[in-house]
Amino acid sequence: MTENILVLDFGGQYNQLIARRVRELSVYSEVRPYTMSLDEIKAMNPSGIILTGGPSTVYEDDAPKCSPELFKLGIPVLGICYGAQLMNYLLGGEVKSAPVREYGHTDVYVDTDAKLFKGISPKTVCWMSHTVYIAEPAPGFKITAHTDVCPVAAAENVKENLYCVQFHPEVVHTVEGTNMLANFVKNVCKCKCDWKMDSFVERSIKEIREKVGSGRVLCALSGGVDSSVAAVLLSKAVGKQLTCVFVDHGLLRKNEGDEVEAVFGPEGPYDLNFIRVNAQDRFYSKLAGIEDPETKRKIIGEEFIRVFEEEAKKVGAVDFLVQGTIYPDVIESGLGKSAVIKSHHNVGGLPDYVDFKEIIEPLRLLFKDEVRKAGLELGIPENLVFRQPFPGPGLAIRIIGEVTAEKVRLVQDADAIFRREMALAGFDKYANQYFVALTNMRSVGCMGDERTYDYACLLRAVTTTDFMTAEAAELPWSLINRVTSRIVNEVKGISRVFYDCTGKPPATIELE
Image (cartoon, rainbow, N blue to C red):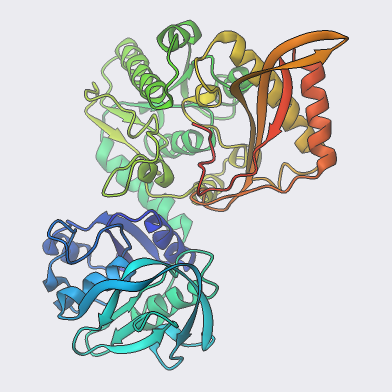
């Protein structure tokens, strides 16, 4: 790969969005830790480098820092927020505590002759988030933007191809942020912007074949979008060397186990070695008495692996385990330098010891919408590619508190009603993810002149493109009212229904 943008991660939660925005410009980009060596960077031969934001203060001794030699490689560099402060600090500028903190939407005044701001409005709205600022830029830098209280909102050293911005161009709140990043990628880095999903699929198949050789592969198939795309990708690469194991842990949506088998089993359209393991009792037993969500995730993650190990021994020597891990899973699990949001069963939830030669995660660097594009490129039917996302731990993290077979039934029945009514109302395409979760709250009600003391469930629906940020879907009251009426009347054990209006951030899409 000759054209790519390297994103060096200094610990901020927006960092994946930078790679995401660059990929939207048809240039391949990936996030690597700031500890990446200069030799590794040279070997990657990036067209440009972006230094991300982060929670640290650059002049503190333990603050993460890259080598100053990075700026002498002749590769264009863009520093964002912490990355901007670090660039100037290492090159002789002055960074200090800001007299006025800036956070949120901020008017920024830019020099439209500057390379980053070609075609940008002289006064533009950007997203600020800092308590430390660049008081004096490093020698050779020219100030190219400011705010009412921040003297250096952006600066450039055109001779050395170094650029920095104090705000976050990668978030949607920066109105012209995509155009600013495009200026860096196209005008500064001179990228041709010709990276397409078909090249990713073709390259992945080739790399998988080389890695696997004559080995045997076991794929963790949940039937969800991610694992389905991973399974078909592996099938294209290694054919009958692949065995797909579908673990029905009793935490799936209503009738979903049978639906998965109908698609990937012997009667389905794919030539796969398919094994269905009915392990409901095993998982319920392991989860008995467990209420903490992180503990539930890790128990399910380890039990998944143990089931796969057992099935691998039944089919013979297996060298590789395949999982449908995607980029949001990786970052939210706190791998690299970013904070842990929650452990995903196929990332942070893995046990310390896994009895396979290697784990293959072909989708690890893709966002959800990119996974769908890869699925279409592989010829997977649209109804599978665009099915509702479903977490690996399943309904266990849509049930607050202890998981029981009865609670699973409640969620399955209520969720089936919600999904049916969303489809009938035509909102199944509007909301990118929607489901029912069961709260741990019980409340008094009255049905048929009798007192009830049953559970409250929660409807959750969001709109998003990359699943790193999301907004609560604005569903019509008539739809919410109809769903509520059906759930309360048809699902014995639920007497109250709430609608979750919280976006991501501050919440996550799943409740746990």
